[in-house]
Amino acid sequence: MRTRELILSAAAVIALCAPSASAQQSGTSSTTATTDKSASIAQRKDNQQDRIAQGVDSGRLTAGETKRIETGEAGLDKEEHTMRSEDDGHLTAADRAKLDRQQNHLSNRIYEDKHNARTAHYGNNEVGQRRENQQDRIAQGIQSGQLKPGETAHLERQQQSINREDAAMRKANGGTLTGADKQALNQRQNNASKNIYDKKHNGRRTRP
Image (cartoon, rainbow, N blue to C red; front, top):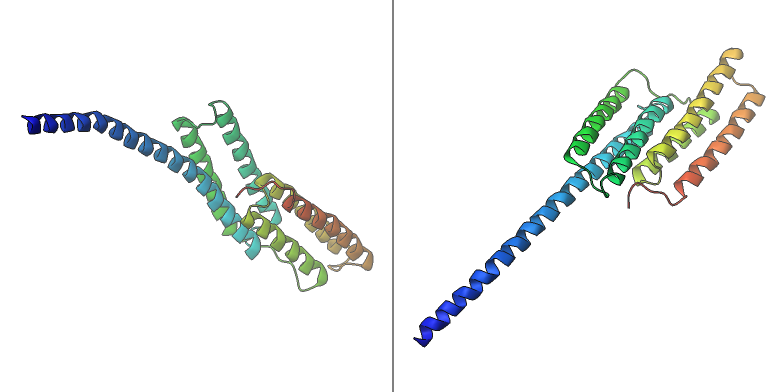
């Protein structure tokens, strides 16, 4: 009799504990699923930035192309922030689907711009070497997360303007640069160099 009572008591304890354990496991699974979804969005943004950095570093993305792509990425970041602010920091399924479609669009643009006939040509000279060095520094900032998309777009807009000025100077002088031209371009690159440094060291990062 005593043994039977002990068996029944043990069974009751197990029955009481089982729902709690099940609920705990269910809660853990739900949390993990939410974390995975958030991670997938962040991971995709990181992957896009890696592809952009590689394109800048290799010269397959020109300053103008990079500016356009990163302007799109910056706009997408703002849209995600707005979506989260409207739902207590969360994204709805519809939000995620919309962001995914927009990232698909940007992904296609990155691919197309990296595989078109336009590449960055710097030339084997001091002016060209400096342009290439600036692009290398920007690419490193994108890769490390020190440069956010909006910051990169600003820096590449500046480089695009310098490139256009360089081309106009050469066109006006039979394809060459005068001493004054080189001095003016160097001064503009000095300003651009400071902007690159400041934005890479302002404490705002896209990655931990």
